[in-house]
Every structure is written in structure tokens, then in C-alpha cells.
Image 1 (cartoon, rainbow, N blue to C red):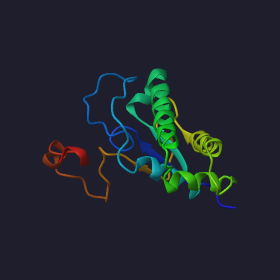
Image 2 (cartoon, helix red, strand yellow; image 1 turned 30 degrees about the vertical axis):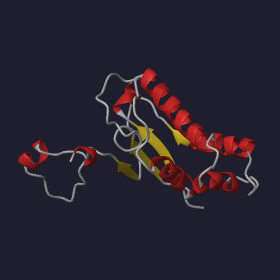
Image 3 (cartoon, rainbow, N blue to C red; image 1 turned 60 degrees about the vertical axis):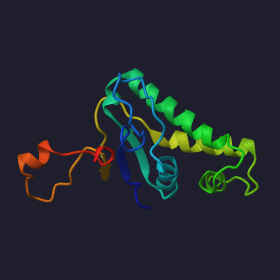
Length: 156
């Protein structure tokens, strides 16, 4: 049996759209990046362990705010009149009925949320890290001018 691989995902700018300026660790003003929630579900149902880490992780209020934000946005999708295919797929994946009802959808959301970890204090060991403010190191060091002019994907 192979061990599940862990991906470490940055919260602000990858999961949370982060279009409003930073206020503090516990204030999260914006919604998800389009496709982020669906992607998290796809990663978990593909057998990956997901750990969300951020500068907010240093504060218990920041970690609590990220967890609450995840609950709020996953349950907002689950409460829609027409549940998206990927949300209904969770229910079937975790052993529910293909005729998805309100209870089954909520149980599926809880099942997913229990599998998303928000670790404290230090960045977790991971097979892969996904961050909007990082460069992949290929053995050559970037010119300092490239580093000074770097912009994340949503600021270009």
C-alpha cells in the first residue's frame, strides 16, 4: 500500500482570491478563486492529503478564520438549489446514494472538510507546495531584478 502524498497549499491567492488588501490574520474578506473548492475536492478524492498553510497559520485566530472560511464557502455551494456535479460526486465517493439529498450533501461536505488540514506554526512537510508567491528552483539562481519585479498571477 502506498502512502498518501501531501500537498501544501497556500491559502491567500491560491484558495482565497485575496483581492482586498490585508487587514489582519483573522479577517478574510473575499471569496474563493474560481475552481478552488472543486479542485480541493478533486485532490482529496484522488488520494492526496491536503494541508492549507498561510502566514495566517501563525495565529490561532488566523487558523480558525481559515477553517470558518472553508466551512462557509463549501456549505454555500451545498445550499444552492442546483448542487454542482463535483459536489454531488463527493457524496457518491464517500459511500452515499447517487440520488443526492440535502442531508447527504451536508455529510459529504463534512467528510471533505475533515480531510483538509490547517496546521499550526510551521510549514508542513509536503510532496509539493503550491503558492502564488513562489518560484520553482531549477538549479539556477534568478537575477535579483527578476525577484524585485515579481508579481503573483492575480496582480499581473
